[in-house]
Length: 425
Image (cartoon, rainbow, N blue to C red; front, side, top):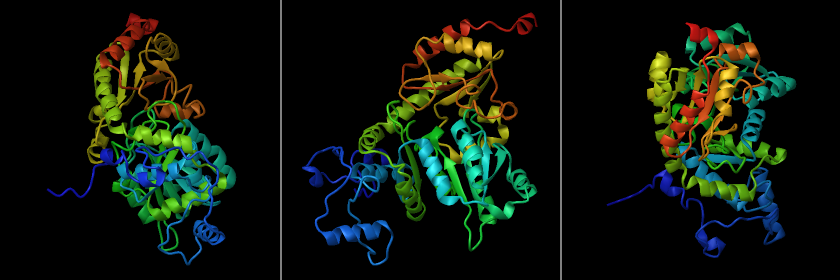
């Protein structure tokens, strides 16, 4: 029986690593070094010429120079990071925000237009509105759930459609789980591309990890991750990643070298270890999330549950997107407590096991208050329009026994008193 290609979960155990180059070690060692020795001056010259993209070295493999440029741990990690998404190349970064910032600065210049989806992670929203605009990039937002005609109308009415350079989206949206059609964005990007300008589609895929959504297969150009989340998976590292074609990622890596936003050897090694258990961790968390969402949906003190499994109920117009793009309901959900900030805080303050902390995708379950925490810097009116209200709580479901999670949620909700008006009614 022929077996020509291993699945990604199998390749995570050794892809890109040659034990014979490391004394036969089964696992890749940590190459904790800043610089590397050249065999000769000629070799050093050739490596630098290749690093700078000079012609004359076609088909040659560039060697190790300096850990801001390349490092064995970083290179092997990148070889594995590209596998789930089916990309040609990947770049690893010191954080999710450094991946986002380095990518956007690589492809956006003064006078360009960035069309972005709402809601966005608060850090990304801040970077787009306060950093990119400072350097002359115009930003135009649209809402998750709007169709192609509505999005294009927003772009055209801005009067800057001819300057469109990138469409940047988060899907599912954080923290509402609203969906955006990646292929719709790709169609719009193609329409406004020309022989001299390609409009890029960039997708922050952090919520789905590399497992449950593959944007490149839906014609996205760049996939971004906060590798801190599911890829790292243990709430003990900060990292980021970008995946795409060799040409696209090659340009991003050049910017990374000058900005110094690369990942370090030890964190690279930790992520390689985490990738080995990525699939089983994410699947366990998703199974738990389904149970928790079901419990919350029946609770009298919960107004609404924002969960991918309820897309057909919450956003019937997005059901087709879900079927086309997603391989799981995921492990992220939010819910509205009956009341407001006081009731949400009462719930959060009474949790016994689930940790009150930002971030997501770890082995442990986490709870936070988006309106005042992760999305605190988003303007109030915008948050209200996007349903990121004071009564919303976001949960990142971990791999614990789901009965324990439901017990904790139940006892915390018991402490929540219905507002007086609600009680009277």
